Amino acid sequence: MKVETLTPFRRGADAPLSGRKVLQIAPPVLAGGEERAALAVTAALVNAGARALVASEPGAFASELQAVGGLHIPFPVASKNPLGMTLNVRRLARIIEEEGVDLVHARSRVAAWVAVGACRKTKRPLITAVQGETSGASARSGFEAAVAEGDRVLAGSYFAAERAADIFPAALARLRIVRLGLDLAQLSPEGVGRARVAKAREAWGAAPHERIALAPSRLAPDRGQRVVIEAAAILKDRGMQDIRFVLAGEAAKPAFARELDALAANRGVKSIVTRTGATADRPAAFVAASVVVFAASEPEGIARTSIEAAGMGALVVASDVGAAREIVAAPPHDEPDARSGWLAPTGDAAALADAIEAALNLGASAREAIRARSRARIAEFYSLERMARDTLAVYAEALAR
Image 1 (cartoon, one colour):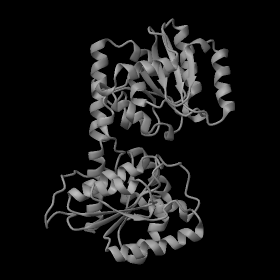
Image 2 (image 1 turned 135 degrees about the vertical axis):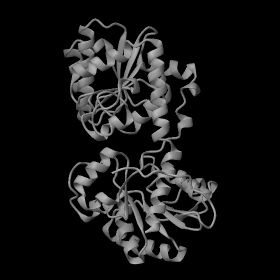
Image 3 (image 1 turned 180 degrees about the horizontal axis):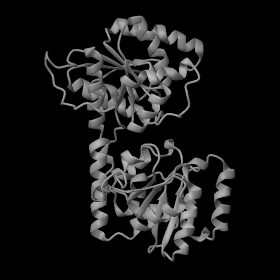
Image 4 (image 1 turned 90 degrees about the vertical axis):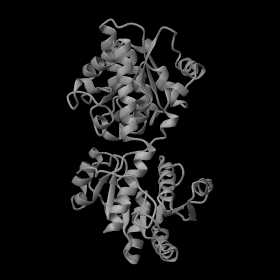
């Protein structure tokens, strides 16, 4: 699988999307940022001379769509009731016919199931997407398999595409890579003032002289907090001073949070391990931290937050799992002079400690060079503009067929 070479989209009679009508089906506003992606793609479609329609639940999203030139169509996207979903197939088919839609993009699993039925009825091309990094398990129903039924199937990383190809072999030729798009203007360390940084450090109880190793993940067994605590104990035994480990995330289960506290006490690092809730101001947290650690054992734990941290130029240390090696350039997958962070084998506390120690011991010039490469890598692969352009390229390919 490879990403096709992309060229800027243009207006005019010979433009691939000019005059086309594209309908995106967006999940509710709280569904993991897909509404932001839908807005960016809507703006790109309008700029390319296409008519952009978005079907979603009623709400503030409609006014934002109108502001970028899109047309909102109220639609009960969130319904998972079998009867309601069956009725939605008919509703969607009617919308497609009445609006003269040329192509449909379903942005959630529920929307994919509905869109598969409607697009088959109306004989329109359909774009679907495998969600996140996918679960790794075979689809247990037609509902779960719908995400792989599109004429083109989007995956957010090469890892996700390869896993999807294992689960849905028939979709291999239809898979395309479209990575997450971030608003890089919101990820500028220069835009984070000293007061915000000081507030973040105060919330962690950090002394002025302490360097912070921040682990910003939901507290759960597969997110690696146990390994972070073990790494803290190793570094303490090595004599490293003035380090505070901050586990910033809500606990999936209170019992697991208590287990982490007990482990920190047992390993003799309770005084240098702070457990807090999820950080509200993540950009400030990334600037305040000396190193940001993602020690997940499952691919789902290496996702949006790690991309944001790398985009801020934080020194990122991550488990070599899932799409981590696409987000972070590090040996042995990349040359040493291309390094933008560190990767450690999953569950290896000693290797994690080595990577954290290496990051903390960098000289000023080497540290700034890695920060710059990290920001440049994220800007190249994870910008909103890149995401929109890649998405439109897939639309044009599907329509050409």
